[in-house]
Length: 215
Image 1 (cartoon, helix red, strand yellow):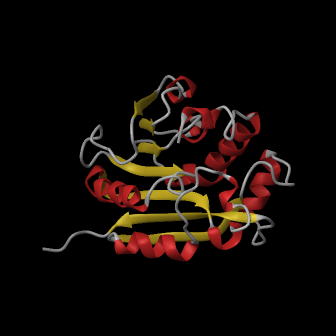
Image 2 (image 1 turned 60 degrees about the vertical axis):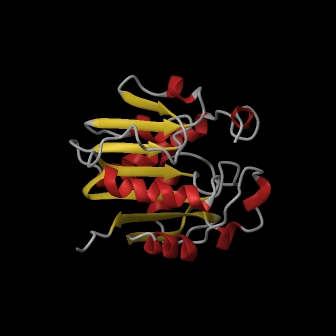
Image 3 (image 1 turned 30 degrees about the vertical axis):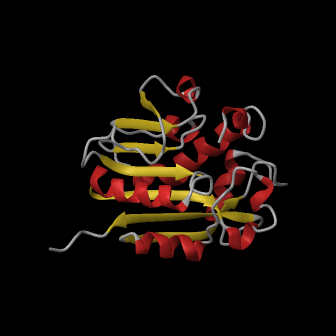
């Protein structure tokens, strides 16, 4: 993915801050304790990690400009997602990736999972939010950087094949993009999270943890 992607396809949008601030407040923060270490992979503009409350916050992205969008308390690392050598073993409680693994080869995703087995603390988890091909097949390749396809079935199978236990799988967690017909407001986002009906829901959310090795 070239840096031009952030100037063309994925430009800054103030509605994205409204979305993530609300998602963190009403969904993700309840899974994160004040003494946790939170890692965001492919952080982009930093909307998720900036809104999280945690003892330590770390953001990674290969885009050299991303660090300037992070709050002063967020540690940044510029580099490839499949090189987590900058992290100490047993240091991360909550790893998060939004709209990332559809952009990288499956081998890179497997490498991330293998490395996270060492980097996550006991009980630590990874949460993945991204397009669900099962529902978004018409739009999936409108983004020219999408290279790998996952549905809610295949990504859970992939996690399990890489020795992770799936804790949560929500096939229709959010609409695909901010360009949908739904207005972006804290109230409507919260109602969407609470509703059993998910109009235009084409993004899935999966949370998993490593299965302990047996000797």
